[in-house]
Length: 165
Image 1 (tube, helix red, strand yellow):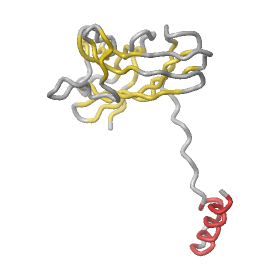
Image 2 (cartoon, rainbow, N blue to C red):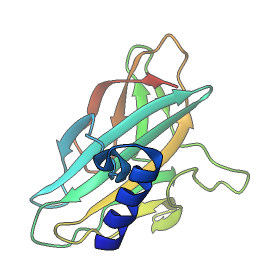
Image 3 (cartoon, rainbow, N blue to C red):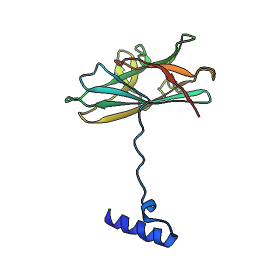
Image 4 (cartoon, rainbow, N blue to C red):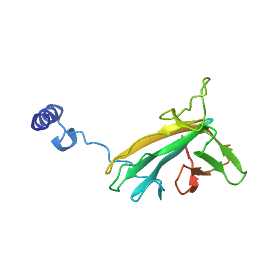
C-alpha cells in the first residue's frame, strides 16, 4: 500500500493534480432498497438491492446477510414445481417468473437442482457473511412503476419502485 501511495503521489505531481484525488477509492457498498427478515434462522436478513427495468427485462438483485451464529442454506425456487421466488404486479394480478433459456435453465446467478423437480439458487452462507444473487424476469409494462418481490422463506417486499434504465 505504501508503494501505491508513493506512485499515486508521483503521478499526481506529474499531472498537476492533488495527491488526495489521485488515490483511487473503493466505491461505497450499495445500500439496499429494503431489508426483510427470513425464516432461515435468527439474524438472517435479505436485502433487496435493486429492481431495474431495461426494455423488456426486469433485473432483481438481492443479498442474504447472515448476522447470526450458524450457517444457513438459503434456497430460491425459480423453475419447476416449487417456483417460490417471483414478482407480482398487484394492480393487475400478474405474476412474473424468472426467464429461462432454450434448455429451461434460469437466467439467474445460479441454476441448481434443489429437489422436488425444482431448480434455482442454493447456497451456504456462513455467520458474518453476505451472499449476492440476481435474476431476470419479463418486465411489466412501462406504466407499472412498482412491483412486489417474493423470495422463498422471506417476508414479501411490497410495492417496490422500479428503476427504469
